[in-house]
Length: 267
Image 1 (cartoon, helix red, strand yellow):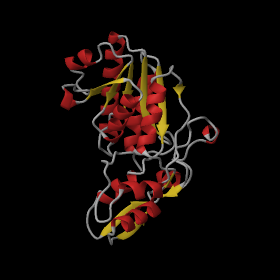
Image 2 (cartoon, one colour; image 1 turned 180 degrees about the vertical axis):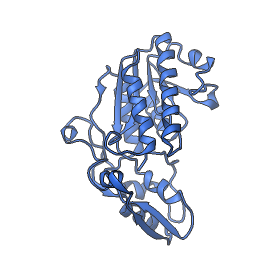
Image 3 (cartoon, one colour; image 1 turned 135 degrees about the vertical axis):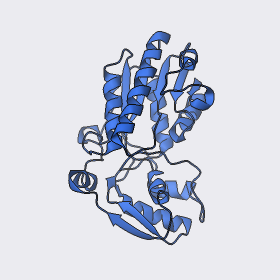
Image 4 (cartoon, one colour; image 1 turned 30 degrees about the vertical axis):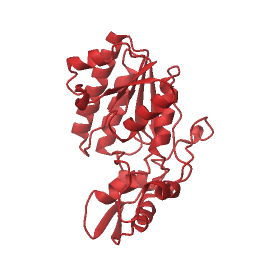
């Protein structure tokens, strides 16, 4: 079985490729470095999807702008689906984010557009919404260097990116499900606390400054807006096993960074 991975050189994409190989599948990486421009929908996309059975879309854009996010995910989604229909792709799987319909961040508007495009597309589909990755704490910390770490107040149930990749592969190699159960880690965390523990693990001294986002966005972020929905709690595969502290012990070296590259998840 050949499975194309859009964004296969990113954090989750690399894990998806590794999990596909481990499962005895043949991954096809779709990225600019491999001659495929997902935004432009270049001719290389049709050639890359030749003989592909399923597509896993973990492509991403780094932005907080709603306009840029919507433009990116709309273009990539439509190009992948149109090319997939021409190539006879049987299953289109998208990684999305828990809470994008409850938290009004600009980046999330693009993810909502992506989901809408997939629902209206010509290829049978599955959307997996996952919570923020453990690496999100590191991304937040490194966003602004200096003696202060400005961290938004946010409740989340973080999950290991590797576990998200494994679930994406399971979904891609099965039948289309529509909206899959939300996928989250084993424990609810406060992002501010995660950042403080990350600093201790690195052996760094920085003053953490918690900031609540204004209005309804802040209320959703500090409440349950980015936690998995209740009816997914007992669904198979709805919980990862690795806690944030276990991830810290494995991936973060004192005085250094984690071995993975953070991926934008919003918040």
